[in-house]
Picture 1 (cartoon, one colour):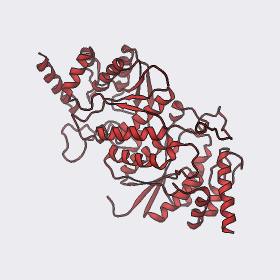
Picture 2: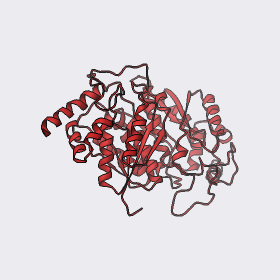
Picture 3: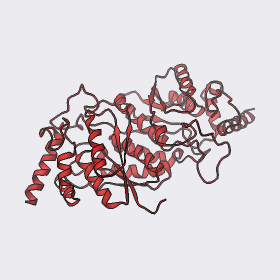
Picture 4: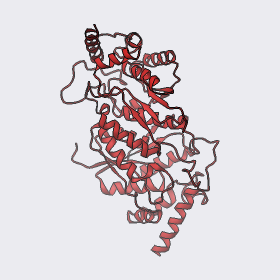
Length: 219
Length: 219
């Protein structure tokens, strides 16, 4: 293993993974990023990711996973399904792509090992838990162990946002000096609008509420 | 969940997974199979798999994972690398495709959930352990737990061959009434020769030694 600490960030160009990217740059000597082209609703996501990675001077690899939409049905890869704006009571929202984080982190791990990187960084978190089972800490810890066994390699999955709510994620981006970049250049909105977004999809609501709280607190 | 017990077999058309396919047909009310087109050296594998699945009256789904060869370097997906015929001492053979079983079982699980199948069957085993970390029981049990957490679904991964050596796998196929089918129609050989194979690649040697032991014992 190299003397330098290296990390690979699973990167989508959204608020959370962009904050993680800059967090990783502060924590590790060398940082790379990986994005997935899985037929997501907004292809713009990948352009945004490339633009931010370039600004951060981080090499980005985009992997194409075009079969994911064939074996799972959800509003992110199926343009015929509308994104649910109200949170359903007894099941995850229809934006859930089954197994997505597990696949992304497994591919990231395979790629990381080929580059002798053992630190993986992901922006998942369970503080603003939205019914996605694969954002939970328990899952990530189990996955970490399974990956290590799978490839006999000492991976360490870092989840700097695991216990942070959106307000605290805004605060972290401010501490990292990228509050403005995150606010104006990331894409989180389900309707594909960069920055403050459409303001009414579930993702924008969460982001906006956190932003307002943080601004009120910061004064 | 349905009253009928259903299982999905990860299927390659080789000796081990073919034995598992018929084992599953004995154990479960309904059986389906899934194969992966990951740029493997012998495309014939997929034709063989389709032929055997049809004989077994089992619906087969083939999933294309063409990016696997892009992020890992091994003799199965890279035609420029020769298959090592001697077993290296300190590392797995160059036929190792990093993370393969983890990816295959994760895709199988995603597909299974979409069809309300919670039993997954795989032919991996550690009795004839060849240096592949992702064939070990410890890995499979960890993966089972991670999959359950990933998708909040009660998967059960079955590994009927985990503790069987090749002789015992031949015996099982005989007990299941498919000894001749497995012997003449499956593809295990790294040189792409169906049935008894080339006889000298690592895979053929293992298969032949087991077969000879079993025939000697059976008399």
